[in-house]
Length: 333
Ligand SMILES: Cc1ncc(C[n+]2csc(CCOP(=O)(O)OP(=O)(O)O)c2C)c(N)n1
Ligand SMILES: [Mg+2]
Image (cartoon, rainbow, N blue to C red):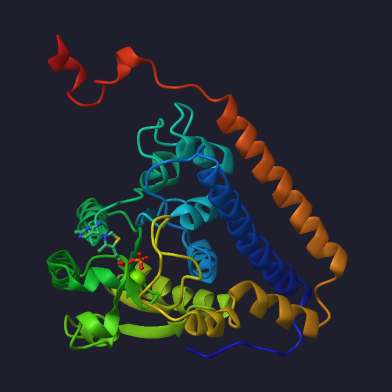
């Protein structure tokens, strides 16, 4: 993929770049608040932050249409926000409140929203891939021209489900856009310590799936790669695989002393913070004014504060409803 452009942008292109910057900031600030709320004991259970990886969701997801489907992992707050699930119902879900997007039963790892065709939020590594293949198979069998985008970490390539899914998607020419977020680590296991072949695109290519790597820290290259993949998948070309090379700046989850990587490595990657890259580019082109940035920060702070108020005011699911959805309503009689 071609890399960043430093040539002056037209007004609509500049507005678009500013919107991308705002959306990455929105995810960053939302998650920083989540970390704070976690320390305060308001959010409990497992929680995995996307800080550092925002360019992938922000670049890749807007190329999708409302009728397309998304499947993600437990590191999905960013994907859910970009897809348009309201921040307040995401926050309520993080709190475990009834008003949350999954009724308070899923928490951070299981955000779900049928209205936006956001099929999770999956805690099982690699578990989303067969779901995506199933969704795409249904679309193909029913003659609907739709795409399913499946986001997963590079840790999934060690799972049988990855290989089964790639094989069937390729064999049946299913409309799946496989979006691998390669942040180099699966919990504390570095890719190079667990895979004999670390070129993930070769794995996809071995199933005859077109695959290419992209700089996952640059939102512009993420968007360009995703658009290219989307057009190919949408026009009936079968699945595509995009490897977004990215990095998480924070720990794997809230319980991770990070003994497996050097602070130096983290600092090196932080120099390529996707927000700073785009901010710097826009400033260099004279397209980002200090007051624009301040306005973004103010609007986002207000949205996050509203989300917290909504979650705080939320209710707990009534005790008598706890067995609902375990068995079908008819079998309860
Ligand atoms: C099948 C399965 N095995 C193990 C785990 C425990 N586990 C949770 S997250 C994780 C690492 C996954 O890493 P990766 O796919 O690279 O995603 P990242 O966390 O880096 O976004 C593991 C091994 C799990 N959830 N599911
Ligand atoms: Mg990983």
